[in-house]
Image (tube, rainbow, N blue to C red; front, side):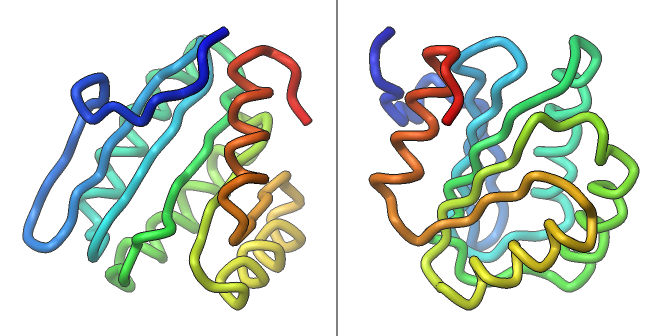
Length: 140
């Protein structure tokens, strides 16, 4: 299976002032996102709408490249928490690539709170290795 290419032409996209969100479906029930800039509640709804479509076919694995996420609306954060709780059982696992070790730690705390598999890293190579394994059907 070829490596994931991050080709924007292959992604569905959402843009608003100061941000770009891209979403790929490289395999069944596998979503990959990349957000750059300031995330709004509208950008979150772009993602959740696509995720809910995939959830109709079974549990979903998600890989979020949020390394270049500069900031987000409080409304987006709160809505993501509520939505995540409602769909807790609909995920196989959610992986995050983030810039800050503090953000990675906060995601780990959220995983404990939700009782869900949320994995955050600041290491691009580790994130990409897990993504490649998921695409090949051999999750790590």
